Length: 84
Image 1 (cartoon, helix red, strand yellow):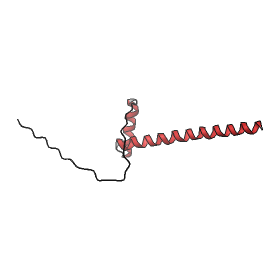
Image 2: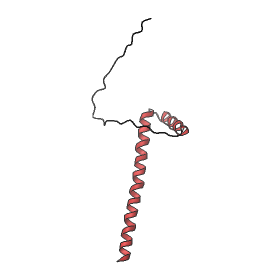
Image 3: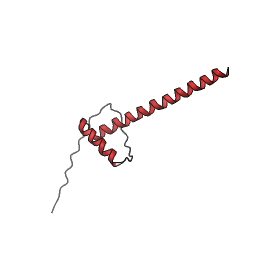
């Protein structure tokens, strides 16, 4: 029996979109299931939804880190003023 392998390669058009980097991480299965259910209900492809979650999480972390830094600087300034 002779089997032919047919592969059609299509090249993606050039775009100015940023290059992507593949990352892997582990999450509990119930969380993944919930994320996929939400993505489907909202009409997102899983990969798009994962990117949104990643960016939203980074944004939330950055806001928290910035708040801590600002509060730290304010406390430092207040301590310096009290010592003067």
